Image 1: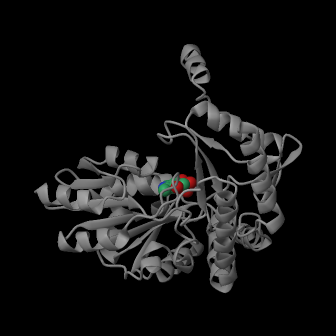
Image 2: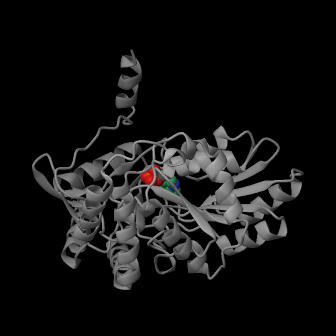
Length: 381
Ligand SMILES: *Cc1c(COP(=O)(O)O)cnc(C)c1O
């Protein structure tokens, strides 16, 4: 079964393989007994391997054990889950927050719960797969607007007659690294009395001093603004949250199926997320270093003739004409001890190398990347 399908993927350069890592996540990782400079993780602040997280998780494990054993609704939660929700609400300046087991679950469960039959969801064409799946799970009408095009969104919103309108967008687009035009979208939502659902997976810990895209643009959370975010990327832990108005969170607690019918996060995971949020508060220098590293890398790439994309977030993209080209470049870098993955359809339309910078990368590691990219450029010419 599926033999032919798999062969077809392979022939089209689309077969994916798992890459086991034998070291903590970080700027240098071990794969197959060899060290590689890592430009592929979303561990933006370099927190995933930090002892503070492990210590917090260990202490929580000794107190509550590891497995949660049941859904939150059936006493699977702990005081740490509630403490974390309070910390998230304070961090996001909202009434309340609810934990989910992953960002993927948060989106599929919440979007389906918020947009019932008779609602219309407006979704950016480049939104994350979990948003697309959440839209599919909802019984709502789904209207796709052109990437970051608030004018197009406005036209579509004006034409739609339904009572409940929900606009859903990534605040940072995961494969392009560009930022949604939130001031325009936020104003549109106010004008049309629409719900704004933001996916802050790549904005949390990165934009607005770490607080996210609303803080980045100086926008206040409105009761009809819902902020979803993850602990799994810049915060170096695992799991996700949705933060918003008290009644919205109450509704999700009662109707979001991916919350209700799934075992709670282990208490040690909640503890690690708490430790990470606290680190973020205490070390504003981490976010600044992340930005300095991003700018340094983007400039270095431009100097040797590459276009790293908008470089307004730590996600830099090097686009190439063909799948083959991207795979060759990625393989060349791999040969030089650098992990910079090729991103291909169906994840994106145009194949590219996606580089992610972190606060933990050193100047020397960034120079090594630029040097290898330069060598490839000379060879290709
Ligand atoms: C990674 C990601 C998710 C999923 O989060 P996980 O915690 O990894 O499941 C959701 N949305 C966006 C935009 C993402 O990049």
